[in-house]
Length: 172
Image (tube, rainbow, N blue to C red; front, side, top):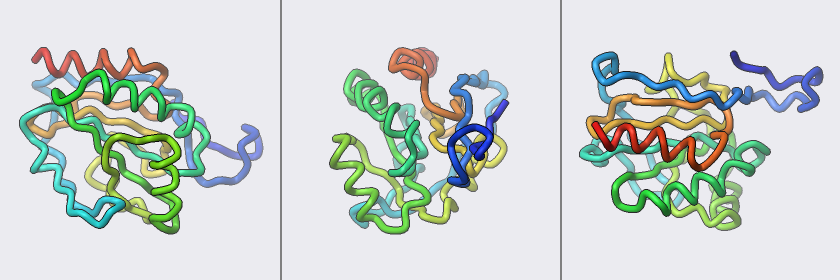
């Protein structure tokens, strides 16, 4: 169940939805086709999910002004550090009107992985059916073949939650 941010929820009219952070896992035989996504990171470098296949990828959707994103970033950083080279992390920055705001967030939170810049949210289209395009933050775990193995709409509750989701994919 998603909760919409509105004046009734005390978050104002920011135009995004923050999910409840409940992990959803997809068993291997029920996973769809590999996610196809290309774009530029915040430094202007090309990013292609197809180039990252061969090991799991954690994709996190964020916005620099999103309070739940700011709360979850230390957990993402810790998970990225703990998982090391076994897993690739990739952010998708949406809603920021410039890369300057996004880069400031990355510097301020010491984000150790690149992020695709997609101000209009178009980078979320390949995740249709899994992610609500207005759900910030969201996290998806892709298996080594690039297929969706797990997702969390809303803030990842804890570092251990994310580690557990990824470890299940690593054990496949």
